[in-house]
Length: 377
Image 1 (tube, rainbow, N blue to C red):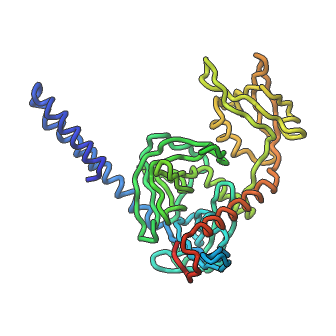
Image 2 (image 1 turned 30 degrees about the horizontal axis):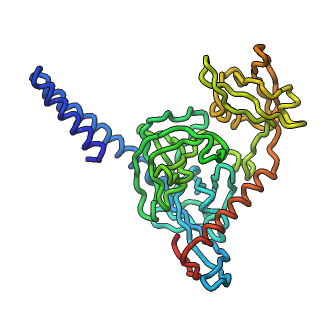
Image 3 (image 1 turned 180 degrees about the vertical axis):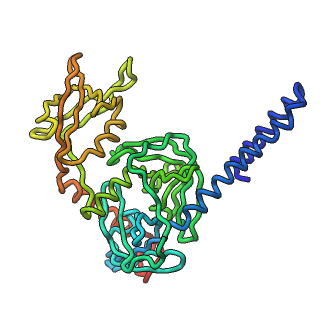
């Protein structure tokens, strides 16, 4: 029985004991309910894990870094990073974390004890998704793949989740937890889209693993740990599917740019509303007629009340695609048509350079800076 199971059983037993004093005939029924509920939950856990564990793989990345040793001299250090990934295609295509593949000289996929050379198909430095492929494909004619629902809604907070990964390089293992909330920023930093925040701890090796709900539906991919909450961020399934399609079709993600910024403002009637705070010169929003102070009310007929809903909608708008946005300006509703432009490559380039810098700093901060061959980190 799990820790949560012990608590549920203890509480139910106390309630049954108290209730028996006034209605003895119902005692047996009350006592049986937590056992049946617990059995149902346990069977679902077994099912989710058993049905999906074989789709999860280990991902290894050999990297070389120049670091400063204890004597002040620079030395070259070879490391072997390990993480998780999962099949998204029958021909050995795997989705994983770009933090694992970043700066790698060699890549391998391990599945059922078989070590296979791999190569990068493409990656997205904004959502930190990487797509890699086995060089020789998969010998199995029917490898298990994780199915993604590109049109699905975000899982709701309080949803019970199960992550599966090769944490610490060990055999595939499950972890259960709750979806704690949705985030578009954390610690003052803005995220590229809405992320799912969970209380599932992400230990070394678990980044890149898939996450499911209790019905076995793919919810997203573990993208980063959150040390402050002993939890993790999960990239939603529909976002992962969109990035997958971009990379497999064109080798890179394709983002849109609208040329405006907005923030949530309190509203006594609606709770919060979205106010435009910046309109870029010569940008799509300026051309469409947006002005600072406009209150955004809806996008393509869907009401939006906060920045999170706005970001969730605009993330899926393609360059060249037009959207009708209704704004309230000085008490009057206006319908503005905005045509998204392709995001500048400088933004993506800057993020790649930032990731590379983060990787170098992480190595330089390692206490043991002496070079070691194939050290697991």
